[in-house]
Each structure stands twice: as structure tokens, then as C-alpha cells.
Length: 129
Image (tube, rainbow, N blue to C red; front, side, top):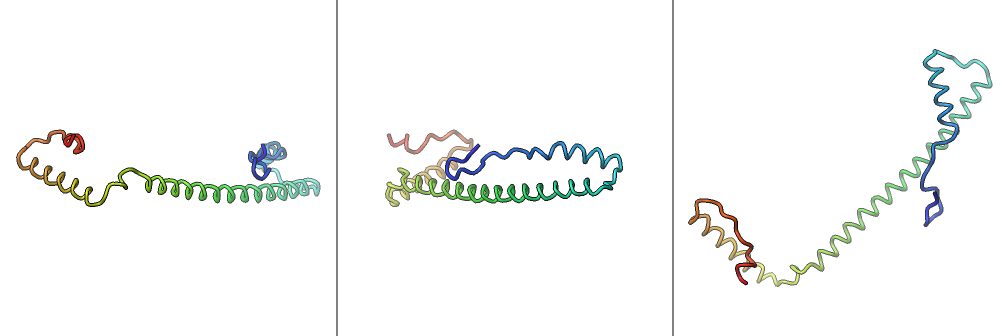
């Protein structure tokens, strides 16, 4: 699958040489096999070079994805901050907010002294309406 922005491969597939080579290698390791011929040693060396090249490509992809993830997180933070700036509560003058909270704290302290049991409080905004 190709990336829509840079046409790079977005979904890597397991290299075709890997599964059969790995099965054969695993069987040989379990059997105590030691490669003796130059052809076998050459095949192993070719495999290692191909695998190292694939591994380097995977590392580049991981680094690119980590950069993309950081950009995504920064974008989410910036969006959150922008939404916070436009929230309705920011339009209420600080003096009004102080008055609301001061009244709420006073009411809360008064109720806790006069009522030994905790009762569910209705929201402050509803009491004014």
C-alpha cells in the first residue's frame, strides 16, 4: 500500500526469503547442524545482508512514525488549548467568578455547620434561576 503524501510503502510485508530460511535455520540449529560448504556460508551471508538492509528500513520507518506521533500529540495539545481559549467560561469577568465562588464557599461552610448529614447539593446556577 502506498502513502498518499509521499508514495512510500505504508504497509511492509515480511520479506519472502525470511519464513522459509528461518524454518530451515531453526531445524538446523535444533539438529546441531554446522554449515560446511562455501555455498551454504554464502547463502547465510546473503541472507544476513538482506536482513540487515530490511532492518535498517524498518528502523527508518519507526523513526518516521515516532516523529509523526510527536507531531500528532503537539497538534492535539494545540487544538485543546485553542478550544480552551474559546470556552464560554472565559467570557465571564473574573470579578463575577470570584463572587460566585465566594458565595458558594460561604454557603458550603454554613451548610456543613448546620447539617450534620451530607445532602446532595444542587448546582449553584440552578439556585439563582
